Image 1 (cartoon, rainbow, N blue to C red):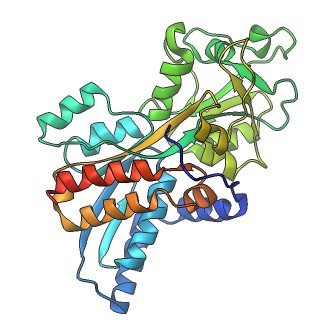
Image 2 (cartoon, rainbow, N blue to C red; image 1 turned 180 degrees about the vertical axis):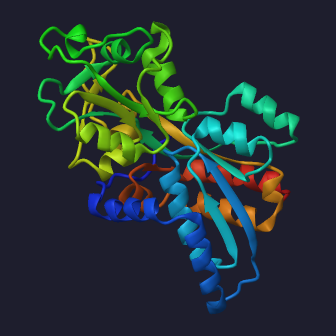
Image 3 (cartoon, helix red, strand yellow; image 1 turned 135 degrees about the vertical axis):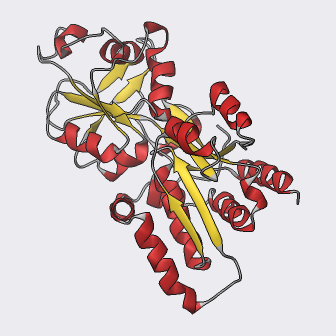
Length: 328
């Protein structure tokens, strides 16, 4: 991941306020606010921008939505969490949304679907994440797990009890929470952690609402789950994050933004948005994507959302892609 100037710690209180608000404010309410504010100023920009996709990228997009609409009250930006794959398959590639957030790169079959519908995706790396494995605060027997141990738990036909993985751990069945199969986080974890061990097991509680995972972990000492770092940082008083190592010869690495930025945390990963070339021909979509990119390197991405901001090199590269697609 390219280096950037981010080196600040995350302000959990400000994140808590933001994510709580983001979870309670729907697109309809925000649209209503926009209508009420329209009389305060009209910059001539109007229209609609539809954003779907990753639940991991969702908090960034909601923050961008709110800030952009404060400046452009006649543009209605809606943001929905559908999962990376769900967004590509059901909304973006069919041409029903302008932008798709993704916590992993677009797949070839998704590119084919987009092409069938004359939709041309533009890949833009807008932030970095530290995918986080967490357990209940009452779990006092494990602080670090290897990829192999995680694979034993999460692979199809895998371990059923904690003691199946380590005889020193309780002889109690796992209670498993994770993202839905439409999630890019699910795809990343399956490919990079389970890997050659096999497929991701299906007998777990899947959801696109990471707050449900938090609630499940908080209330069961034998539960384990995984999600994007921002949701852990927002709830670090409710769940316990595990350190992770790639193999037994590696050191345990704690999830964190500095570690993700430096690439020393083994589950660090880039986050993306995919606007379509066709949509950025519309002025309101172009201006929203431009705003998104220009702000993707801001410190508030870390302080208020909980991800690693883009480097200036990433911003410049993305802006070049945007202007080329828009014919500027």
